[in-house]
Every structure is written in structure tokens, then in C-alpha cells.
Length: 221
Image (cartoon, rainbow, N blue to C red; front, side, top):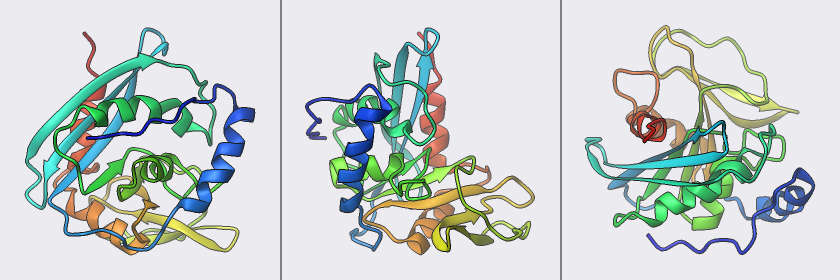
């Protein structure tokens, strides 16, 4: 997969904020995606006391969710852990992993936030804008927003709201199990994001894309 890397990655929040402000205007939250044949999951783990970032990408066929390709890469961690700036810590090494693919995914589900973010520019947005591929944020925990009580059945969801704006959805991916926090990343709407996350989820809480990528990213030598 051809990737055009940014020339320089910031190493402080002060340097990252102008980039967020510039790129968030490029985020598209309407459906601009073709038929989906391949869906990918990306995740990042850390080695050597967080000094090394390890990214994994798993490409699955859709809708049967069979693993087609995978890649793992490592690079030095250069950005600190700061809430709201996760993309600057993880996207550089994710791009390295995507670059190794021979299959270009039609949709990427990220283990992180999309527009459900204080700046409306989470990891899924940042990645999607840089590579111009539809992306979804499907996070295990809430960063911001409030919602009404969620029914226990799989497939139920409630809008996630911040300052009166719908920024995502709280989605029950498995009955009687903690929900996921789904939001558009780039080139996809909220309802379509929910639909694809549920279609990629079988008998577990996490989408199969995330499960594969998470397993790879947590491996050590």
C-alpha cells in the first residue's frame, strides 16, 4: 500500500495542536466509500517500557471475515502519552505497517476514537485523512460525551452527545457485555459506521478486525 508520510511528526502537544486544527477541517463524515471487499483492523502495542511502538494491521475479507494479510512494524516512540493526542503517538507506526500491505483495504476500523474527541479529530480521523481511506473509530472506552442508558441486547445503541452535538454512538456489540464507542473517522457516516462495526463483530465484544490486530500488536520477540 502506497503511503505518503508527513515530513515531520511533532513531539509535543504544543506542536501537535496546529496540525489538529489544520487537518480536522478535512474530515468527511458522509458516506464516500465503494463496495467493501477488504476491511482492516489496526492496533498499537508497546515494548521496552513504552520506548518502542509496535503496530499491527490485519486485513480480512468482507463479509466472511477471513484473514487475508497481516503486517507488523516497530519504531521508536517519540510522542508522550497525552489524552486527546493519541494519534501523534500511534499513527506514525501504523503508517509503517500499512505500507507493508499488498492489499489496500476498503475500510479500516481503528482501536480508538474518530470524531468522538475534544477536537473532533481522533486517531481514526487522523489516519483516514492522511491515507484517504474510509475509517471508523471503535474504542473500548469513552473519551468524552454523555448518553442515555443502553439496552442490554446486541445491536442496541444510543447517541453519544457532547455540547449538544452527536459525536458518535454507544453500541452494544454483544448482549450483556460492555459497549463500544463508535464514531466516524473519515469518509463515512455514523449510521454506516455502526452497521460495519456490528457486521464485523461475531461472538465477541470486539470486531474481528480489532481482535486480530490486537493479538498481533501485543506479540513480543
